[in-house]
Amino acid sequence: MSGHSKFANIKHKKEKNDAAKGKIFTLIGREIAVAVKEGGPDPNNNFKLATVVAKAKANNMPNDTIERGIKKAAGDVGNVNYEYVTYEGYGPNGIAIIVDALTDNKNRTAANVRSAFTKGQGNVGTPGCVSFMFDRRGQIIIDKEECELEADDLMMMALDAGAEDFNEEEDSYEVLTDPDQFEDVRKTLEEGGIPMMSAEVTMIPQNYVELTDETAVKNLQKTLDLLDDDDDVQAVYHNWDE
Image (cartoon, rainbow, N blue to C red; front, top):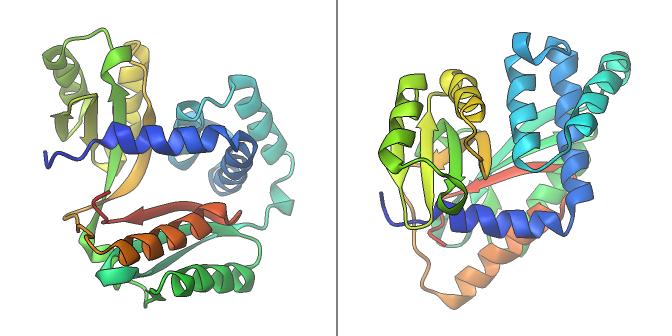
């Protein structure tokens, strides 16, 4: 591994999310609605829904809230008008940024995303301009303090379930999978009683970029904060070495 503490980053995000849990639950609720509309209400037969449910559980959404969301979406399929849209661009010093949004008004979302990039001295690029620098992978983060299994046993459980890679860091374990194998691996770990800090299909940068200029760091943080505060934005991926 490169020494990046995935858990530290996840923990930081979760602490921030905890302060706005209502917003997080609302965003996941939208994802549930779209997933149900596209593939039906049964997670066993709807991979996208299963992935969203895993994300919901990792964010401590109660099971009854998840089930209510699925039932509501199943009875309200015709009224779901959200759609996914992805933006790619550059922050200061060429930092690559990908923004996933779920919106009912693409013009509004595009304007807000463009404004966030501009205010941070960056710019939105064309589709594909930075995504080639990332790999789409299933990623599961496990807090060492919460996991009773030894590292070797956990690694074997994950690899036997279909994981591609297992990494140990100072405070966490990282399990990486092919997106198509993510749900099988996640389910195996869940059934094995392994507590997961984060479980989702994500975009992982192939290389990280350091920023040493204080102004560039402030500008990039400004862009990331503005995107984080946007209700339409579901996820932001970047290759900044924080």
